[in-house]
Amino acid sequence: MHLNKSLASDAQLYEILRRELGRQRNKLEMIASENFVSEAILEAGASVFTNKYAEGYPDRRYYGGCEYADEIEAITQARAKKLFGAEHVNVQPHCGSSANMAAYFSVLNPGDAILGMDLAHGGHLTHGASASFSGKLFKCHFYGVAKDTELIDYNQVAQVAEAVKPKLIVAGGSSYPRIIDFQKFRQIADRCKAVLMVDMAHFAGLVAAGLYPSPVPAAEIVTTTTHKTLRGPRGGLIFCRKYLAKSVDDQVFPGVQGGPLMHIIAAKAAALGEALEADFIDYQRQVLKNAKRLATNLTDAGFRLVSGGTDTHLLLIDLKPSGITGHTAQVALDKAGITANKNTVPFEKERYSVASGLRLGTPALTSRGMLEPDIDQVSEFIIEALRNTEDDARLRKIGLRVEEFTKKFPLYADLL
Ligand code: DSN
Figure 1: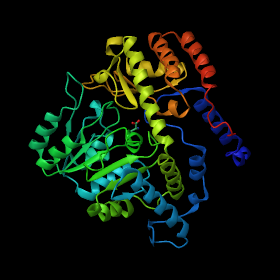
Figure 2: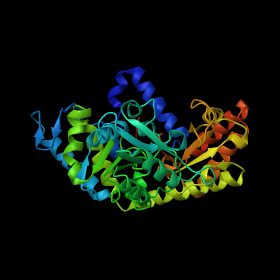
Figure 3: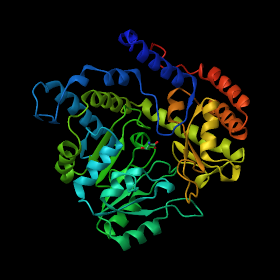
């Protein structure tokens, strides 16, 4: 396969694609929300469906020529419902933010109160942060983690819910390394008659594999992206109870979006097909084992992990005791060929652009075939880099060793 052959006539673009592929191959990808899709998913995402307008839904389109678009969307819906055991799914959201926006609009009006997890404690921008549409359109209230355990403080969730009577409660987040108790959220939502929405973007792949509790039985609405642990193309999905199906569909189109990205929907079908295979469970098991091994190695080396460890694919180092910031750590790791992101930690005092934490994840490395002994080597690279953040020469040397190491785990060997 030589996917980008026709781009060779555009030397400028070809060169950028070639360098990006090289970056992905030669570095250690540890951003917890990233992954490497299969070549089948790449192909579906780059397919002729990019040419097709298909506003509406299968058998209810506004344009002609949608017979195959209908087939592909129906297959995507069927696979998504089977994988997660949901009553209804909308597979058209272009991303997690538009999925969350459409989900909110299906049950809320502007000005309604919502309750979500504080961004600094592990929530997501779209769960009510003032910089996001959610913070601008709704009255947003927040819960967080307890100071001593750094686990979600369910008593606080209940108290705030009782006080502000939100119309919707959001569970889920982007840097919370532990399992969330959806039944507790359900009870709290029932007591204040709120809709419960779970944003499972980060752990959707683990849910699909049965390695993380499914939020589908507990929540009226479950949103996700498709490109994190689920290992699909960039995009979103909304699952909901049957009684909300029309409302959710109407809010995705025409409420928030226009024409669906049919090529991405084709790629979602490919990804969901892969997730229904038995070896997807083995993959997710290894993601968890690798994250636990990384957590153990970092702890043994003296680093402090928020909540003391992880139950998931991600972990969060609190760098305050190490005397460096998240920004410094991210820059140093970059020089050493390790890609990760700075992150706020609970009760953060730094600005978001500096941050006191570093988030690391294992989904992408596991997709490259890494097992625990490989994670031991990766841990050594990380630890050495974090202990030598000001020593550029040493960081560059680690980078060369990283590049050599990555050759053992070929990525897209047939491309370019
Ligand atoms: N940007 C994603 C993440 O990194 O977690 C959340 O949308």
